[in-house]
Length: 578
Ligand code: ADP
Ligand code: MG
Image (cartoon, rainbow, N blue to C red; front, side):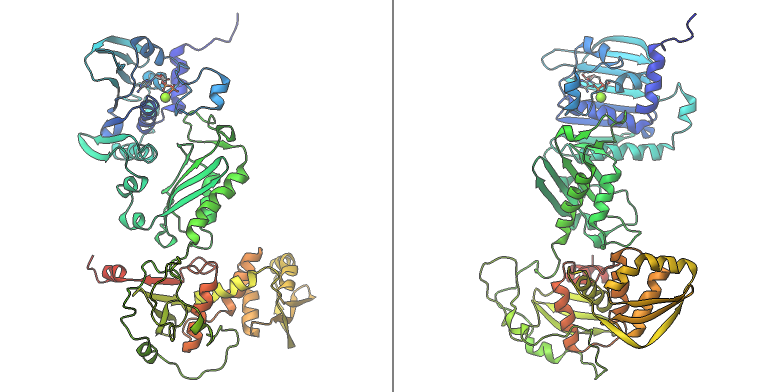
């Protein structure tokens, strides 16, 4: 007697349903994808009780003959692929032939369909995998699938579902994800008779997003676009200043299939590196189009995971595409060219109203504004069309006039577009020093100390120090281990005072800094001008000028914003006029 049996088809389907039909939102996904695969132009989704009582999807696609309907509810029955070659190049959402039989095995399913060109349709009703009824049905061309009492025959699985509200929300999320990538289809979602979303045919991605994401985020979305041979990355991504504390708005599509993928997420985060604080997330909708052979979509029955052939290439492609769209700076190129009549404010008066600070000790490390560039650099509006510029004399730097310092910490400039620019002096200087140190072949000179300084070391600090020893040497530090527990500091980078140099060293050990970037951040942070320090007008201008030469001028190396660009819209918000 053989002890092995082949499981009955009904049981096979229920087992498969464990992976494909986890909850109402998985039903929404599978049915919507079937409708899209059937070439539907218009799809309506109805939910009752968050999808627990009913999920109904009605489409105007090409429909099915009755015979195909009976096949469709059998496992591995599909019209979408027929061979291994087809699988390798699959373009449709579905191909496994598992969804309908799985759903049918754990619900009451009513499938109605009328192919185009046929006068009437047919219905087929199945209860927990068993045929209940079938017959003709009067309906419009297309397909309607009603799924009632999902998982009612599997109380153990039903227990894992959340409240109607939560399940309903997941259904909406899936609906939206598919709506963001099928722009040519009219899509509507109802819940308990209420219309939740309506997306019209041929809207843009921005149109659709504006109905689901907060206005503030949508207003400042940047286009992402990078073409490289057979690979294309496109979509929209948020400005770093709109970052959110939640990571739920990072949506990825691979060949139009909504996926969750660690590589894509880390590529996106990489692009924002240095522009966000550690607890902040970007918001983006990113589409990656690539040859089917470069990606395996058949990793999981729900098909929301993929495997890339060349993960490194994908990572760098996506992060480059996003970084590129963030790099266009915000304020060197004014968003609006000045009016022909020139500045409203007389630049002469501007200079006179400048807040001046008294004499202080010289700080050679501060950049200082140089007379000559005042006359040479005209504002750059990013195109070559000749415009009548305000007289460049006395306009300090590209399109900026200096107004003064707020509480010895923030520098205020007027842009010749009429907007105001507020710069955090510490963050800005940090950025300047950081980029200066990062330059290739940048040689840092050593300043030897007249009297070496002793620094006490813990065991852990000593071994960390050994790891970064040679890097510190290259940056001008002259260090010597006197014994197991004592470090002798004999020389420091020439741009730092002894206090700054030792402070930087201490912070590196305390924060367990290992990589070069973080070492440079520590040096930049400790040597940069602090907040609460008065700056002369020339120092302020010098700082702004040098900041504008930086590759990244909007964020300090820690990821905090450096510049606030304020116009009437921002002020209106502060004054609660909007
Ligand atoms: P798959 O989508 O992987 O092929 P499914 O079980 O989801 O498997 O569907 C089985 C088959 O039923 C499909 O291949 C398709 O031919 C047919 N079908 C399902 N839904 C529809 C629909 N809305 N319109 C037309 N045909 C459909
Ligand atoms: Mg399917």
